[in-house]
Structure formats: structure tokens, C-alpha cells
Length: 211
Image (tube, rainbow, N blue to C red):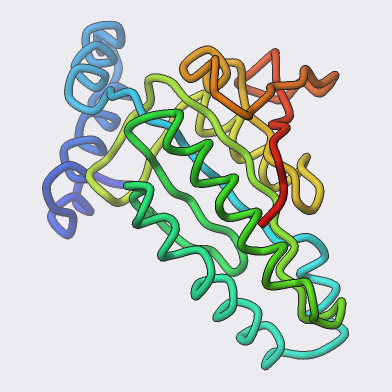
């Protein structure tokens, strides 16, 4: 992004990209600029990425209207749960959601509630109409740019766990999440062999799945 582009941006986003631009200039004191960026935007949040299993294949098989139906079903199911657990929806991209929570335990409880709601919804539906949810969670210090976007190691890890690693009905979390909210009544964190960028130790959330 060129310097001339900043005039179209507002507030936090404009400030971030101006600092990033100054960081790339010859002779820039990168350590000092980095400290300013983290001072301005660094906060501790839990990060949730969700994805739907087999979504692309279903769209290919059943068409765009099926795509819109699945998106609508997901939103009707999950948005009220995000709100009731004090989550903030940052963005939606097709079948994926990016949500942040102030507390790791809130993110875990929300993820469990979401999976239970999906199981109940799926109970009497045909396979192609089921909402098969995958969830990845991270927790730690990240860069939060207003309500536009988030960046950081735990963001990357949550994305990889939720969108690339988790299978249907799974909740996978980083060690940051486990450490921030353990112990939790009725919830176990089972160690995984999986390593993803941003987190060298990851866990599967085990809980009573009865809706």
C-alpha cells in the first residue's frame, strides 16, 4: 500500500499502515516502530475460526442456492450464541467465521454451545443439509485493529486449527487457550500430535456432547 492510499483509511487502520510504511523506509528504527505498534494495538484476546466440513464439495454438487441456504442456517444457529457468550464477530468469509472473545473460557464455552446446536440441528436432516462445524481457538497477545481485523501467532494458529485441521464436530485449541482456562468443569483438553504455525502444542476439547 502506498502512502497516498492512507487518506482513504480511518482511525486505527490508517495509523497501523502508516507505521508499517515508516518501518519499511531505509534507516528506520524497526525495534522502536514495532514497540509503538504493539503499544497501540497489542491486546490479549481469544480468537475463534470456524469452517464447515465438505462445504466446497456440496456447493459443487448442489449449486449456489444450496450455498446460500447453508450460510443462512449457520448464521441463524451461531450468531445468537456468539452474542450470548460476548463474542465479537470480526468477519465472515463464505462458510468461515472469525470471532474474538476477551476471555478464553468464554470462547471455549461458546464453541461447545455451537457444536451442540449444530448436532441438534443435524439430527433429522439429510447429509447435504447438515451444518458440520469445525472450530479452532487461540489465545494470547495479538494486534487488534479496531473491529476490522486481527493479526498474530495465535490468530494464525486458530486459523490453521479451525480451517485446515479440525474435522466435523471438533474443537481444537492452542496451548494458550488451555493454559488460560484450565481447569474447566466437564471439559478435558486432550493433547494432539498436530503442530501448526504459531503453536507448537495443541489440544482437542472433550466434553459432554449431549445437546
